[in-house]
Image (cartoon, rainbow, N blue to C red; front, top):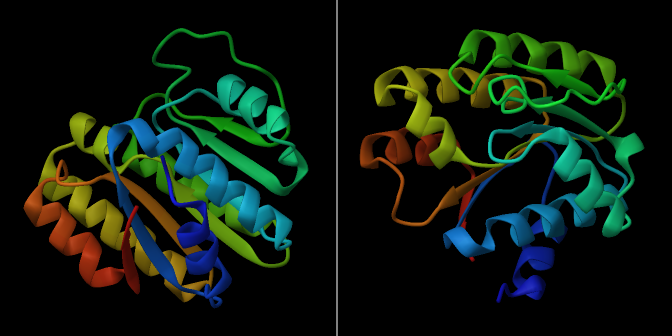
Length: 184
């Protein structure tokens, strides 16, 4: 069970442009994801979700069940196309060929950042899933570029990883670019 007060406390202290890495157990990933999204949208943030572990259609259904407004969110779905899933047509989703299409993910993120207004956040729902599909050194460079871009745009970054399952070198690269690492 996740300590929701700890998450809310961390997010209440979130200042513009901060990057936070949440590390948790695998069974807590979805709950952590929805708690973070719910808390930030209630604080009037607009978000971009880079989804590597669940398709847009599933996340949209889950968020609706949790009363999370999809109007405040844009999705970069890195899963549906590679799984030959039916692609739900929506103005707030971009489908990427697969999780290893790092250049396409980066371009889609840049385009999404330009499309949304106000306070923004970017959430990467699973560092570990991305590592399964990418070589660690290439992925580390990708994350460095993404986190640098997020910081330059003064956008909040939320990263979710499975505790103690992330490649040590990649975690070290990501950790040095984060303002806070929280174990849930």
